[in-house]
Image (tube, rainbow, N blue to C red; front, side, top):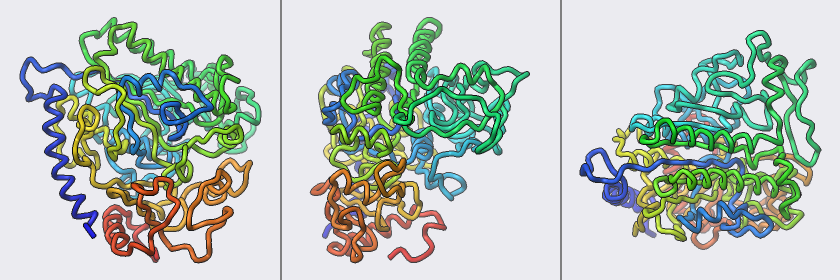
Length: 542
């Protein structure tokens, strides 16, 4: 048997050479000739909890996504793209830093959603994708869900909220400071509360506290939203309406582009739009309610598609479309919460034929849509099966703009520009480390092989319909997924202690080959050991 690890090493060396050649050809590097085309504007749209099967161009039939489908028709759609974490916060950490989230927090890793009082999880002196653009003369902005914390110690929510996005390379930030399902339910602009009043500061009272500010009423079918934990800042709270978040973020993003064209039109820009759609609660604006065949979940997808359409229309109207690289992807796979369950009952499969859901390390938790459009550079209507992760955008954007990366700053990121603009004959990435909510299930992909060092998905533990975190074997069986390790929602007593899948032959992960391919298991285990934090490396794995 050919060693996947030895093959991986050879592919990695080859990919560097291919990447360097295509990067210089496709994007004006600092050492390119003076007449080389300038690098493009970049719009990165990062959807929340959008599954592999949630878009028309990825096979959905119960929702309509014409604007996102247009991106795919005019650009390239990727079928083997991954968020390197199946969880919101660590996925964002990887996206911005080019580092696996297992390396964060002094090597202890970031595994779950950042708590309300979390400090900033990215060190201000660490290079981010925004820094790359800013150092190359771009105007930079971030809109939407942040969920990476503020300040250096426990966040007391007193302004200024620094360090924060502006200390990580963004000139401007407007958005939801945590997530649309957790307080504080306010907007933050740069380092201040929108509508904030020094005479009425935001006060964190804690869980189950009395005297908190009332919230927008939402129905039970909109799914889970945590109660408010804050008093004060009543004017700021009043500006946050759950049913207006999507339209507000779209409007702010478009306004920033138009202001940039008016004030700094000769400079390129980078816009990072991290939508709250389609994270729960499902509160699309009234115009989208009832428009899909997948309940409020599908309606939220329709609003997301409209948001993308607003940004694309802005680019068109300002003559920017031809000079702008647009990348659309998701922070993790779809979650089988109340909204997801209602969508399934209506016939929608949020993660398509993939096994599992958000938070888990089965494919449904982290294989996500990824579409890239750059007219004249990315061939229209094409599809790529290159393996890539959101962690790769740092090196890709560095190549795009001619920013030189040291090995340390490149971290875990691989330049995927050749996969965007060309047709590499070999894989550019030899392996990819994938993290679920539980660090015991930190896993690795190498070539066609996916290795999970434990039973199960390592994600949510809900066991029955109606559970907010319905997941694992019970939920997989409920939606009709098949797997040799479980039956009727229960793990078989003789199931292997770990999992190995051949994704080339079995993308839906129906058959665990752990006992049939011991040599591959041993090599994958050795590779994974290079990434485990000390705590996860200790103890009996088999």
